[in-house]
Image 1 (cartoon, rainbow, N blue to C red):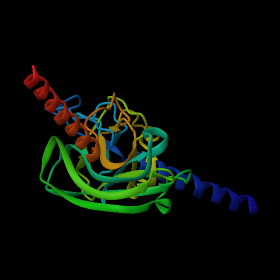
Image 2: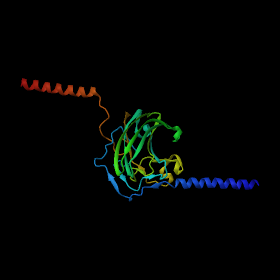
Image 3: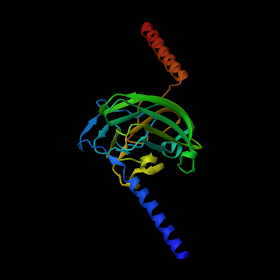
Image 4: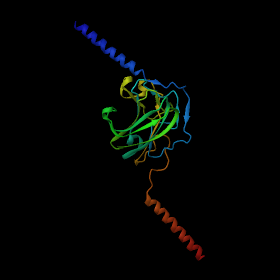
Length: 262
């Protein structure tokens, strides 16, 4: 009798595991013709206060975005180690983000959320502390690039930053490409058997790389985390500017005096 009960329990466990596997397999790639792409007309400059894990921040490629076709929708994440990977210190405040859309069949909204995560803490919903959010309306579109304002601050010395893109529309494919990334893309959808952030590569989509750039204001000297960085610093010391102007004025004055005496 005991062995029979054990057999029943084992069978139930196997059924639950099989159901979870079947649910996770519901994540699907975009049904647009693979390999089509759009390139940003004016390449996006990565200033010291812009961070990304995308090797190419200017190109959306069809057939690389993943979603859960079952309501209530899908959440994508990037998790940034602000001090370790981007050389930022002190408070880092997000001001806006750049992202893409591979395809959107009908008018929908995209929710953008800034979270802070204590360094070393597991990447789970329970450990995320929301720092700010924005809801952005979008019309039906395909292969487009966007910028949206969102505010939220994290302490780069003690916290990582998780940037979330969420849509309640099953037919919303956020912009991705297969052109490389320096850290994983994470996805979440309880209706597809993944109620916590999971690495897309671990569920069978290693070439789905979320295109995302986070623009902010903080201290430190990060180079953007991709490419050579560059760009114009977020702010310039007014005292330095005044000193340079004063030196230029003094030089001009002495040159005029010398010309007059000669």
